[in-house]
Image (cartoon, rainbow, N blue to C red; front, side):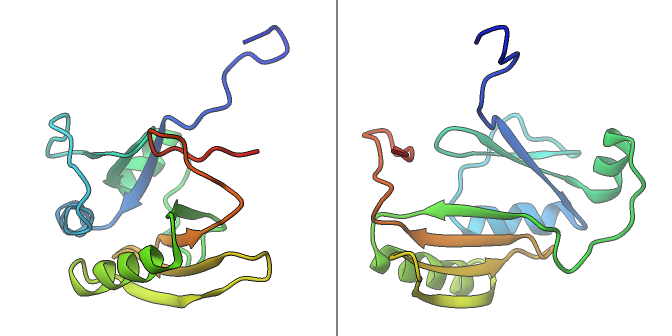
Length: 148
């Protein structure tokens, strides 16, 4: 960090506001994600490759941020993405999300105009997840994106 950058460019935690904490936790566990022992009756944590995913009741999340709880819009202007090593992995991951976790397909996987392959599903609260293969973004040995 320098004087011009008072904090590092990293995302440590993404917290999703959810309507039913137990149902959302079960959804992400069904995806095969590892629930953290730091979870409790108020918030559920999942480990990801280099950050954490938190699930927290929507109204409480709004109160914590000091903003009004306005209900869940159909599109929040944000998507979350999991990049995978191949098109086949995208297809398999989406099938798992639907068949095992009960995800809803929003956009079936297809070739993209930028040379990749991606599709979208939504979780029980309508949060959009993109599953993508980007042949131009390799992975490090620890599974993080190695952006050029």
